[in-house]
Image 1 (tube, helix red, strand yellow):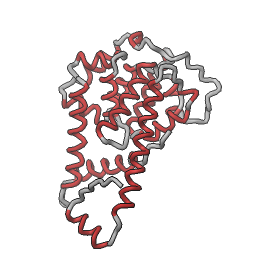
Image 2 (cartoon, rainbow, N blue to C red):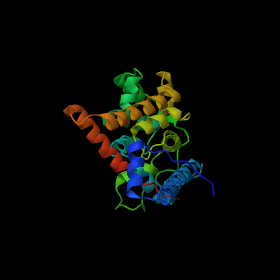
Image 3 (cartoon, rainbow, N blue to C red):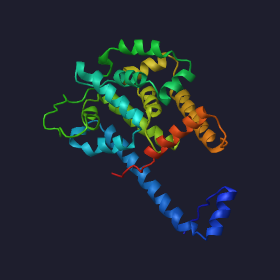
Image 4 (tube, one colour):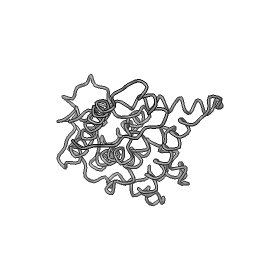
Length: 261
């Protein structure tokens, strides 16, 4: 049977030995669950990237992704849904505007760290020609859709243009690359700048925002938050305590495993 080394901090290793815990079965179970989660995300990415994929024929796919989202990203999708009323579609520009309008998310902080003026970017996004997202889905005939579902779990998905759908796929893919167990606004930003068909990606790149710079900034920001959480003394000030409390709440909310399939 192949062997995989597991490294533990000294204190934890001593505590495990003192408790007489058998590490192998625990690690096997944890790794099996992690593999199942990763396989589920990869399967979902492949599914929604298929040219003919339609969320109406697979509503459970939207529900799975929704369950993986942070509260702020869910708020962002609702704002994007509101912006779609003009033509019935959610374009990549709507996703970008909604991310900016949500107001408090790591995606905005990343843009600020890259010296992007939020107001200028939003004004430019409003001017994007919707025709840039030219590969639209079939008309969103919403009759027959389960009206009892939360609009964010249903209408959002079936109104996405192809470019917006590819953006969500790229956002999901970035969670795997970064080793994150949740889907947040920072991942949406990565998805937007990676997407080549959508107008929002073109706009972001015109503001000198590149996929690599966004991904580095997100990784650095999350690493900084985790370091602050792990090393802050008990006497830390109220402001830092509040930041860490919110981060813990976010991680607890997003830590549930992503179902396979």
